[in-house]
Amino acid sequence: MPRPAKALYCAAALTLTLPMTGVSAEESLANLDAGGLIVEPADQLELKAEDIFLSARQVRAAYRFLNKASQDLTLTVAFPLPEVTGETDLDLAIPNPASPNFLNVQARAAGKSVETSVEQHAFFTPDGGKESEITDLLKGMNIPLLPAGATTAEALKRLSSEDRAKLSTPGYIEQAGENWVPLWTLRSRIVRQQVLAAGKEIILQYSYTPSVGSAAGLYFDRANLTGESLTQYQKKYCVNEGFLRAADALTKRLTAAKPQPGETAKTPKTRQTYFGYAFVGGGRWSDPAGRFGLVIDKAFPDNLVSFCADGAKKVSSTRYELKRNNYAPDRNIDILILDKNVAP
Image (cartoon, rainbow, N blue to C red):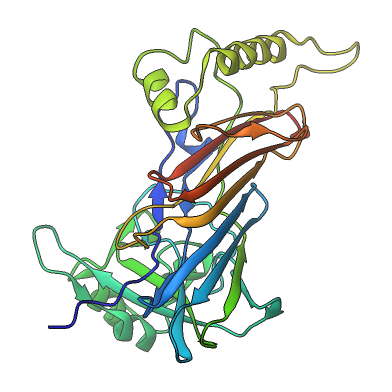
């Protein structure tokens, strides 16, 4: 019996705002983590190098593969977008909600831009029930498949009462005031075909606009960040004493800032932002990369940043770098930035 083909895979996930005293729901956005490739079939491939660049403005990933087979391979290369599930009172940071390619993913192969297509399927799972696909039903009503954003909300409001009943009766949508909230789940991936010559190497590159969550203001003074909130920040972002001291000092300085003569008092506009990259999950490539590189950029020298990446070194005023040989990350990475450069 032939064994299943190996695939390079990296999961995508929804990350919610951690509990924090003083931040209301209206002031915060949840983020979506993407990352990685699915390459099938991959039994004859070797991942020679993996290089990841993470910033709040752009994520770039490059994979160098070697075809070890004696014949050319035609590969299906897919970049999975984060799974999105509609939910009442959930604000998501989605860079381009009007497009099926809502993270603005771009692909390159051997240094050249390549065409891709977007595959999308919508599913609904009732409480205690079995998942069913409703893609064709939504398309037939001209409803965007992304269960978030103004475009989908407006399309639901324009439905006839008969069509709206077809969605509300089985629970695909629910009413919230004058609006209708989609409750289905969207699964998407960016797909293309790639021919890789026998015995040759190729570099596959992907870039996209990350989903960056945010919360207004700073609440890292010792009076607010305590107990379970502190524990979660330490676990998720590996915040240490140095980071906490600097954040505490920043919070107190901004809070105590007095307006200049003739000015009215202003609430500090500094924000915390957070985003991540999904390195592990599903059936990810089981072998380590021959060479692994990770760069994290915090944008401004005076921003405070914290993340879990043992061995990462500061290489410039804004960048941190991790280099490993024969390495595969064993956890996803989440990045917290206290951005002091938001205009008041």
